[in-house]
Image 1 (tube, rainbow, N blue to C red):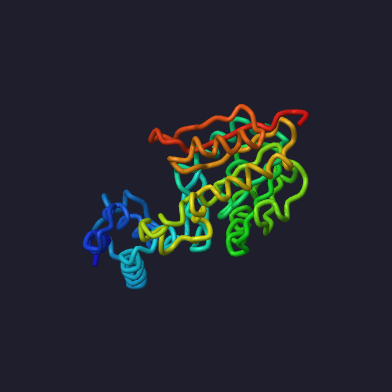
Image 2: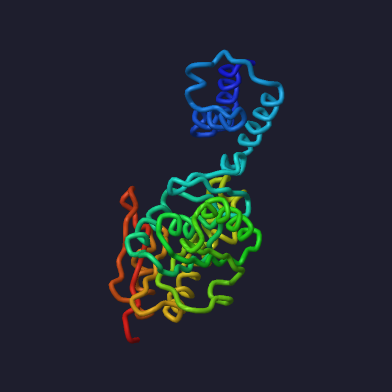
Length: 286
């Protein structure tokens, strides 16, 4: 098959499998295999494709038809303008989470120290350090397999910074269990999906992303309660806590922060107009 014929075959297979963005994903998989870009389909549809590339593309298309996420097939996901490595051990970074990073960046100044709980791929912490100067960060996760991914991303995306400009380390910790010291900012995108909802998620999420990073307990608030109750002990006075939340959790998580003594608690909406981030400040002198 030619490049164009192979693309149309992939699109047809994905369409028949019920993949919603079949045309886009067929093209992206072909570009991943052949090292090409979107212009090749327009300008060189008649180019020959090597047999090995043909076979690899066919395998990936068939895997995608079984609802294995695109990002697991390519091993990559773009987030905050950076390319993160991902696999089945971490949540795939999502655009909604960029709202959390953007809000934290508004309060992140040179030389600050950041703690990222439930760090997963490290996308939140690494993005914050990448777009700041002289900041230091700790990423914590209970999964050692996830931490291996985060460390690889840190080396790849922060390794080019000069010595002293940033420092990052990743530690195995059940929330604060292995954390010491104080921080200027704590961020977290914890598991927040109710246990009874997990089974209704899209197959790409339900069957291929780590349940450990999804399940927030019976009401989805288990991790927020722990983080709200304990985080003030790890924040300097004036330090801030930023949390990603589910679309219907703004009021509940805000109340948890206020009851824990945080002030200036705010809810931030995402680009769809849904509640996405809650943040608050530890007051001085308490």
